Image 1 (cartoon, one colour):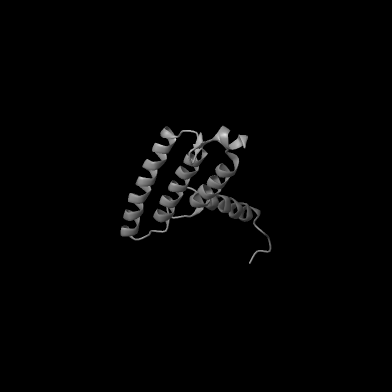
Image 2 (spheres, one colour):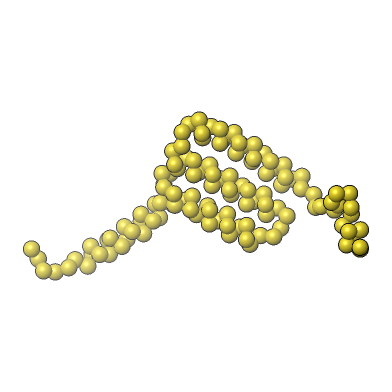
Length: 117
C-alpha cells in the first residue's frame, strides 16, 4: 500500500461537492430549487414596498407550492386538487395585478376626512 496522498483525489471530491450542490438546484427530485424559491419569496417580500409587490410575492409562492408538490411526489389527487386551487389563485393574481386601485376611502370615510379630525 503506498504511503502518499493523492492531492488530485481531494480536489475531485471538492469539485463533486459543488457539482452536487449545483445539480440540486436544477434536479426535479431535489429540494434545492424549492429552498431557493422560499428564500426568493422572503427577499422579495421584505425588499419591495410597491402596491404590486403582493402580486409578485404571491406568484413566487404559487410556484414554490407547485414545485414542492412535484418534488415530494405527492399523490396524484392531491396534486390535481392543488393544481386547480393554484390556477384559481393565479387568476386572482392576474386580476389584482391589472385591476388594482389605490384605496381612497375606508368604511365610507375619505382619507382626508379621517386625517382632519
